[in-house]
Length: 284
Image 1 (tube, rainbow, N blue to C red):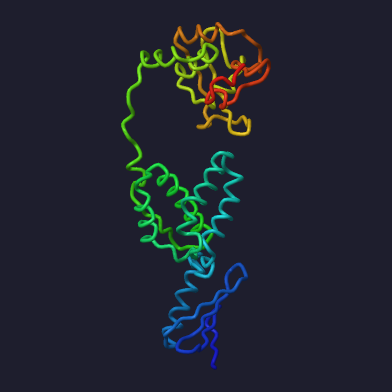
Image 2 (cartoon, helix red, strand yellow; image 1 turned 90 degrees about the horizontal axis):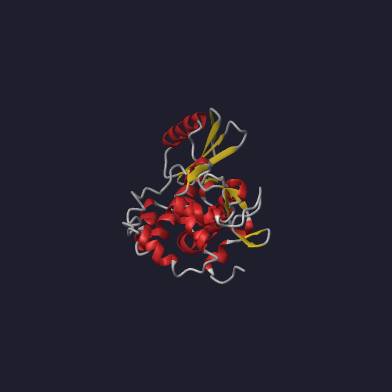
């Protein structure tokens, strides 16, 4: 069979079409069976490919022929180095329960916008889970585009979290005091401070006495994650909070420590953890 060189590629007759081969700037090789085709059609296709290769825009379809599960495993490996342990754990769970059952065995380049839209519609009864899973899927497939495995992401759902946000009920000081009246006295100062400072539980737990000033100011610089890990705050920002007098009094009534001594210890010198507040009666 005749074989003709065409710039940095070749066109070879192949059954009812032609096989195209070309080299890449990185020293690699690409190939494609283009059929049915005449030789002029095949040569035009090769010129189009060479133009894309020169511009760095060519998409080799073979790179997207891996399964979604295999690709997502690689993507998770990169995310593990970039996100908090709790976020990584959530991504693993999302893959196992929400994404893999639908997309796991599919080849990456066969996942279409239609299949993503249908998957999204089928999970409408669990809007929060659907939103979080969709964002994970979208982030992963956008990475596939960056890695040259897809030419474009099939994730085009508009406002995937539109059913998530619901109007929250108002909860005033009187409601809080009613709940507080049923709380064991040991827990009350911590809950008072968390309520007054609009703190997350993870921000409350690692507070130490270096974060508390005598004029009622509270400095929040860290949060407690799972497995006892202390990290920067969720937003990465530090904040100074002036507590209302009643809540400041509750804090000042505690036995004052120094430096890194926990404000809310589980026992002498030891910081409590989330389980102490979620399971009443576990604090001494």
